[in-house]
Length: 248
Image (cartoon, one colour):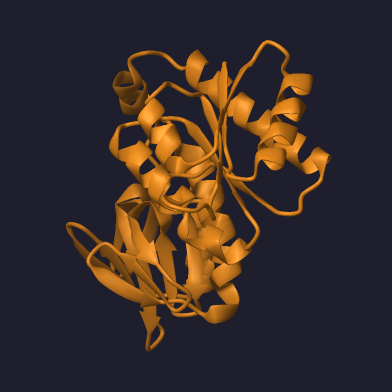
């Protein structure tokens, strides 16, 4: 297993390398002092601990370039300011560490990253066939006199107004009388972790999130409101979602 550490603080990088080698003596550990150096090396890595705030090409730019090159490395961001991480998950980051962090926290994240790599190695090579055999998930809602079956994966987002819930799907909308809290509970039971409620009027499928900030979420072709108090919760939910599906 190849584990890379990219941090322009040499002492920090060396300390992390020592912790990695202590925990996994057989691992090959590679140090990079900048994002540019890492990208020029163009070598395979299984896990990457990547500092966000670096001179020149920062960690976020480096991660985007790695993803453009189809790198499937398990990326763990390192930063002194947590707010930087809130923009990180468009590059399918696995986790993050906020400085200063203790050794126990680092080891926990390292072990989780190694487990993720091992899960990928154990996966069947024909992932498409496995995916096609996976059971589809549905909910059923009553609209007028009809009961409508809806595949959860097709739901982009739902909104509520005048006691009616409008479920937006790529192939059309479904409208019915109901409570958002009931729909949220129903989806959480069936597709746990795939949906999030950023505002009392909206429930979104994290699969369709394109970008976000502290006040809005761009989902599908629409923009929904983010309650500021829910922003940290959204980021954590989106991180867990990426951890769940990254590499599948």
